[in-house]
Length: 261
Image (tube, rainbow, N blue to C red; front, side, top):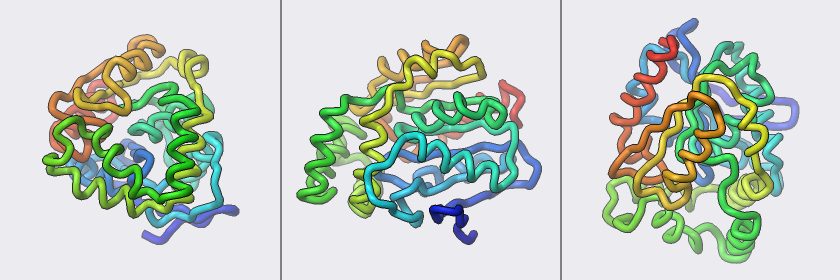
């Protein structure tokens, strides 16, 4: 599929599945790309699935850092409008989950359900992120790679079958894009706005996740009345890469329960 040319930005996106089928938007994490969702998307053939490379990631354009969270939200909003999707369920992991929260608050007319995976209303502290940004600016992403894999995958990270692919994708990310999106995370606190949401929501956590531990994900789910919480054992920060079959089954069951295919 050719890239989408917005007035200020070119975004790489894929749209798959039957036209007119229930729409599902999948938003990846910092330091990954739309390929993170390959194993899950392949198991949901009855949905119209939109995936994108966030700005600064994958095959999308890389504007100069820093980026604002509002710009990342608007990028996804414009893609949904570009493809004419309505009544979407938006699933985002980590940074993608923050974007999903912001999009739901801004455009409830576009979003009828949320899947907040390994994410929170606020992730880390501004100081932590600024330290990481400084490291990447001076030494590149390789300098953060091992510590990131350990946070993502847990103590046994070196032997995790998903690690080589995730690490390669991480270090392949454009440093400018990583720093831009990291700055957006550093400046975001969605506690008050996410607490205003009233829509079907599933929160997913990984038992081995050191980036957004289960208690943090559960706390965020608790902001939205009626939100469900699902823990995936034996998985860390990116369970869609570690256990795509189990993840797709959980996601598919939620979509079915809310009448979305």
